[in-house]
Each structure stands twice: as structure tokens, then as C-alpha cells.
Image (cartoon, one colour):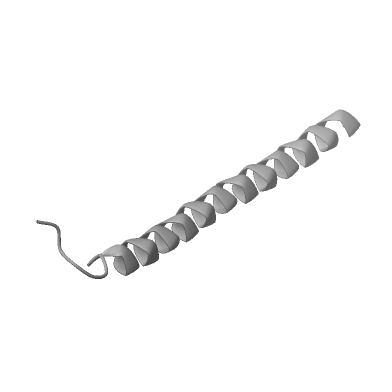
Length: 52
């Protein structure tokens, strides 16, 4: 027979999911910022080479 009352782990699962989503979003944002910085550096170098 199923247990009566509240499900046991739903709160912990919800917290874990929330934290993992935060972590995943943080990593995605860091990767995106890193790519943008690299593109800016490459663009700057190419412009300086074109001027010479």
C-alpha cells in the first residue's frame, strides 16, 4: 500500500534542481563571456595588422 501523507524527497529534489540549474546557467554565461572577450581581442589584433 502506498504511504499516506507528503512525499518524502520532493523538497530536496526541488532544491537540488534549482541549484543545478543555477550552476549550469553560470557555466554557460562564463563560456559566452569568454568567447566574446576572445572575439574582441582577435578583432583588435586584426585591425592593428590591417593598419600596418
